[in-house]
Structures are given as C-alpha cells and as structure tokens.
Figure 1 (cartoon, rainbow, N blue to C red):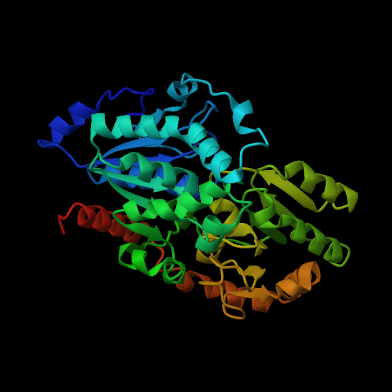
Figure 2 (cartoon, rainbow, N blue to C red; figure 1 turned 180 degrees about the vertical axis):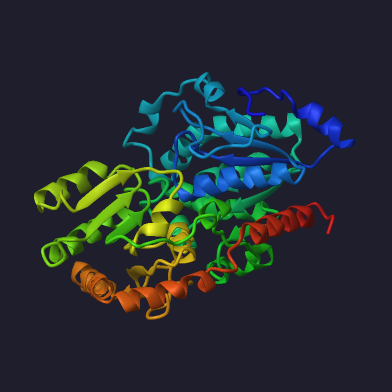
Length: 414
C-alpha cells in the first residue's frame, strides 16, 4: 500500500503471502507530486506493472512540494519523499560560493556537491538499509544522483532516458545551468548496470564505452486509451502536452490565427498545464482567438477526446517518445507535426498517417498542413485509418515484458 515516508507497512505481509522474499525494485524520480507529464506517467505505470507481476516496489522522489502522484498508483506500491529529511540537513554559507573571487572550476563543482550531496547521502542510506535489488531512475536529475548514491552499495541501477540524449546531456538550458551537472550526467553512466533508451537511434549517440549497456525499450499506448473506440468526429483539432516552450504550442496558436477566419466551424483545444500557460493565454487573447482556441487544462483520461477529435497537432521541437501522438494514431486520428521532430518522426510518416511540415516554414507551414486536412475529409480518413498499424508494436505487454527481462538480466537470472 501507499505509505508515509519511511514506512514499510504491508510489505512484509505481501512477501510472506508469496512464500519467499521477492525481488525489490526502487523507482527514483526527482519530482512526482501533481506532475502530469509523460515521464511521470510511465514512472507510475511501470511501478504498477511491476508490483502486479510480483515485485516489491518502492517509488522514491525528493521535492519540496506536497501532494500525491497525478496518475493512480497501486496501493501495494510504497511511496517515499525523502525531501523532509533533506530539509533538516545543515545549511551552508552560500555567499562563500557566490563570491566572484572563486574561479568557476572550484565554485561550480562545490556548489553542485553542496546542493546535491545531502540527497545522495539519503539515497545511499536507503540503499544500504533496505537493499533493493535494482533501482530504476527516471530523467537526468534522478539518474545522476541515483548512480552516485549506488556506489559501494551493490544496488544495480538502470537509468532511463526519456528524451533526445543530445538535448538531455549537452543542452545548457535543460535540467541545470551548472556545467558540472552536465559533466556528471554522462560520467555517472559508467556505474550503470544498463542504460535505457526509447529508440535505437538514441542509443547510438552514447560513447562507444557505453554501447554494451544500451537497451531499447519504447513506450506504449495504454489499455486505458485503447478501450475507447473511434466515433463520430467533431471539427476539432487537439494538442496535448506540458505548456512549456519545448512543446511549441505558440506555433499552433500562430498557425490557427491564419486559419480561424477561413474555418469558423472548427476549433482548437490544447490539453495540459505548465509554466507557459499565462503567456499562451495572453497570445490567444491578443489575436482574438478566444472563441475558437481553448486551453483545456490537464486531463488524466484523453481516450474519449482522441475518439472524437479530427486532427492531432504536435508542434514540439523534440520528444523522447511522443506518447500523445502515438495514442492519437491508435484511435485513428491523423497527426500534424514538424518533420524534424525526433521521438515523433520515428512513427509518423508524411502522407501515410500524418502530415509533416517543414519547420523552416514556421507557423505558415504548420497552417498549410492543418488546412490540407481540414478541407479534405477523405485524406483525414485515409491517414487516420493507417494510424493503428503504425503504433501496433507499442503495447503495454511488450513494455512490461521487456522491463522484466531487463531486470532479471541485470540480476544474472537470465
């Protein structure tokens, strides 16, 4: 069952019921409370899948925000937020580190370790006292800390990568502006038992010395989506994702400004929430689109929307695995995206199951792609009908089987 921080209530009873100690798996992520992103969803659903297959699962996060996971977590999964203990750690004289007299080569590593070492110590203490067999970390902030915490504990760590590796490991605007953080992101991977990626092309990015550790496990279209059946389509274009610059919903707003007057019987709804919400809302208002372009907020069950919307637009700059576009395709909705978007162009093909716009053309190119589908119902039908086959291999069963295989292999049981 889900328990308070540090509690193991119910775990021993479950183990006894199975008649033997079960394999212990710790899933680690930095932020989980109230987060509705794709990685957080996969984190929770992997925990649910593993506990259903007989593993003893603990989900660990470390954040100041109070709250429960946005997605439903199986009651048999233990949930721990180590941040309350982190807060009690000794306070450090930050003014010493901020002194301009300290060279960057000293200040940057020192600042990183003063901020992160308390969490590393707490994770290491957890590993030493509870001795999980495997730890699976999600996203770079947790990957680095989990790998460093595992040193000397015997815990096998599998860091997971949910985005384009070059972006997550080299982009100075992602995760931390401290250059030392980017150094450690890659350096810490040498301690991994295996390194998860979403597509084979993503695995090729890593250094030769790590290639033997690369394992490809793509994400999946959930049963909760597949239980819906496509119905009568509304004149509705939808987008789904976090309202953040990388999702590029501003381009969809600008594109719709070029089309709204031409297609007054159509509307656009973007589902999701995030730091760009106010900016996007202001632009919608500024362009006079309030009657036809809506921000629909977060929604845990998108299947009903996918089943009745006509076009899915995903203007993101890049993706690890475009969960929402894959779900839309599974329910026979054609996708409009930019052709250079990794994590989407692996399964969306221009003229097959969607329309891929040239990013160099900006909002105008996106508008042209949308316009083609709006005016041509037969094209929408043909591309939509091709959708399910293009994502047919992305199943929950394959995903769960692949993770069980990987865990057992790391424990030398297969």
